[in-house]
Length: 186
Image (cartoon, helix red, strand yellow):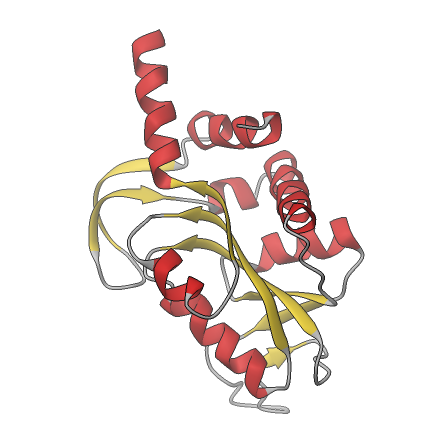
């Protein structure tokens, strides 16, 4: 495991971004734990680290892209940080088209044929990020890859991997493995 990834995993615990209890996830599934990536994406140091890891992961896999995109809300700060890290323009995908103005579901420019690195904070089943991919493809973009901070390992990799390159920075099993090591060290 690389040093940057190890630092990111450690930050999940130092920032108390792994919570235990009863939670209902965006997917509608119930869970006894919650990964609160927003605790990290609102922390400048963690956000820079995430952006750097995403850039290095994409480069390491030979992913070439023209723009960075993220669905609202959780992915927006991460996609913004990655746009700054790479110098690539940012695109934000709304959950629904605006009810005013242009009525667009996409903020930022998407040109036909452009390759998009699509960002998500956490994936469970992959439904949210796949809906964003569909919106971008309808606008003429091509999805170069989907990069996620944490994959909960509940089907997202399989669903996303059917059509796209999937780039998780951390899998939930790696977080729990680190948690177990931490508890034996204390």
